[in-house]
Structure formats: structure tokens, C-alpha cells
Amino acid sequence: AQKVTQAQTEISVVEKEDVTLDCVYETRDTTYYLFWYKQPPSGELVFLIRRNSFDEQNEISGRYSWNFQKSTSSFNFTITASQVVDSAVYFCALSEAKETSGSRLTFGEGTQLTVNP
Amino acid sequence: GAGVSQTPSNKVTEKGKYVELRCDPISGHTALYWYRQSLGQGPEFLIYFQGTGAADDSGLPNDRFFAVRPEGSVSTLKIQRTERGDSAVYLCASSLRSGGTGANVLTFGAGSRLTVL
Image (cartoon, rainbow over all chains, first blue to last red; front, side, top):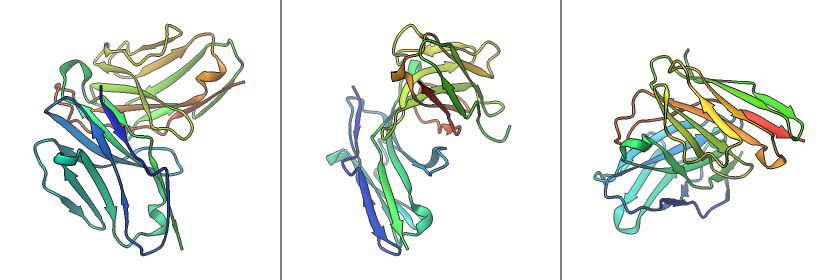
């Protein structure tokens, strides 16, 4: 069975601080995909990034960066110079590569990030 | 449409009543997913459609829950004899294709908030 753990339930920072959201996953599959989604107060989940299990290169997109470490089964997300608009719930998710399940996602419990001015 | 549309956005019903929730996916997206999100938790998978058929309905909690997608586009999630525990946000998502790789990015709707009194 797959499992995603986001140990940080809530994080509160002051604007311009850097913040890292942790994600640890469990799977027996050798091929899988990892995702991060953002859920602002409006409720709609917004896709941020996808990573496959064979690509451990870290990725940077503007103020966002992701650190994938297969050895520790972690896929952490860092926001640099946080802004108030970054306030949202962030979800890490895992997808198995099976025909019958499509892109079925297993989500973590989410981390509520609050960025204060 | 431009995004995934879900109606109604809010539904309040009484225990024991029947409820239908509708999802209109992005045009051309063949894969459609339903998830349920309880307060303070991550979304949980309910059912996945590839075209008109339910490829994976293993997430449906019991036989009171049923979903259809008769023409391979719009889907309806049906809940019979609603219980207070069914109260949650029901999220629909769609993707371009699901070739069994698990790689497809899901685009989510804003959800239907169901409250069972």
C-alpha cells in the first residue's frame, strides 16, 4: 500500500522567510510519480510539480524548489522569500504506474502554510 | 470548458436523502476522477473513469455511492440514503489520458461541499 506523510500540520512564517515543507512517502513500486499541489482558500487544487522516480534532479521554479531524495523516500518543497499569497494548504501526493489505476493519487494530510506580513 | 466545473458548489441535505453531484471535465480529457476531502485531511480517491467505464471504483466506501459517465464526458456522483458521515467536499479531476503510467497531471475542480444534517 502507498502512503504519504506530511508531518507538519501547520507552519507559520513571516513574509520573506524561507520555508520548507516536508514529505515522506512509502511505496513498493519501482516506478512512481510524486506531485505537489497547492490548495488556496478557494478550494481548488492547483498543480505545482511532478517528478518521476527515476529523476532525482532537484528542480527550481522561481521561488519554488524541490528536493527529491530516493534514499530517504522524501520529496521536500522549499519556498524562498515567502509572500502572503503563498498562504495555502500544500499537499504532497504519490501516483503508482498501473494500467487500471490511471493517475490515481494518494495524498498526504497537507500542511497549512500561513505567511504573515 | 476552460476548467473542471462542479455543481452544485454547496449542497445541504437531510440524513436519508438522495444526492447527485455533477462534474463537467475539461473538453477532450478522457480520464475523470472523484475524490472526497474531509475537513483537515487530504483528498481520498473514490473512483476513476477512462472514457465511459469505471476502471477503478475501489475507493467507493460502500454501495450507497455510485458514479456514472454515460457519454464519456460529464460524470455524476450519486449518494443514496445519505449519512452525516458523508459530509465532505467532493472533488472531481480530469486529465488528458491515462496510459497506465501514473504520470498524468490532474486538473481539479473547486469541489462540491456536501453537508448532511
